[in-house]
Image 1 (cartoon, helix red, strand yellow):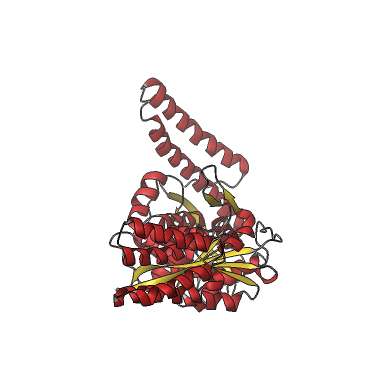
Image 2 (cartoon, rainbow, N blue to C red):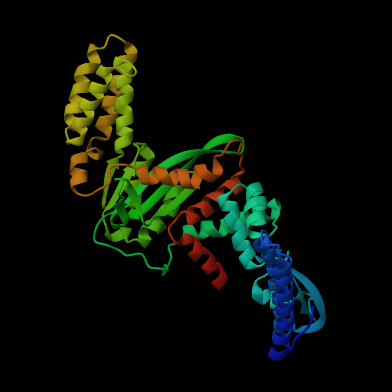
Length: 438
């Protein structure tokens, strides 16, 4: 690699490279009329030009930085030689060749390449930008498709699946640490309104270490960030999503920092859940000033199951009974539903049907105060957990529950942390900017 020590020398080299590219482009596109593949040709030749230019600049930067300073052991670092290196970048074609200065500590003999350290290049020659791109590809698609399609075919760079898995493990650990620490000064700072904050909690299953295990997920959003589209569907313009494989306490450790960043300590919190007791226990521990709401669609599922069991699948009587119970729930007449079930249960000759009705009566009684749907709607609260169920699909199923997928615990936990950040509004860019600042 040609070594430049002044700006004038560097510009002269750049001019020569540009003239060569211009001649090749004229001959290929204009004279030889190879227009059909002109953009593909330019991507290859343009990538080569950019890599050559960066190699010259990196060589010049190495001369500018030099070799000086102290080693971590306290010894002095001295220049030893100039060495050729190959750096893996995000440019099409990936590899940039340069000549950099190599130094060595006189005390411990540890070697150092100052300009590569300044750039943040890892021991295998990967730049921070390629780290970020390869990690993103791994989070979006399975490793093989991420390597061959997203990186190879689309970006024109090659990264092995083994390297991508290593990046996910490393960055996943950093993502987990970030999720459990409330940001001191989030960028951009989320607005804290006077209205309530909503926290939806749900779960999903993934296959880890030879068995199905539950992923617990929380979706945190401000009511002001929920809008209704032209088709009448609700949509969130901003949300925070966290998912963990483990106990309710593990979920609490990542939900609270996200909620606290939105002012949960000083606001009423609306907690939406499917009726699982652990959800309400977690809500009680985290949010003293809360309103608990049993998701409307889960209530409908329970009532519909009893309707089918009593009157048969798809019958008019089953549909009529279901509609009556839902109309009562929608108008805060939960006690009428419970009283009706208690009247109905002893009149069933079948033990199975009697048990169905009794179980529903107990379920509704347990969640009685969480089913004041008319009151909740009048207050502007969401009564459906569509936001958190959508988050389960986006965070877990779209990447981690495809056909035939199997996970190890460490890889699953790392991917969940990274997927949580990826699906949280604006968090992915903040995550990588924090890494670069560090």
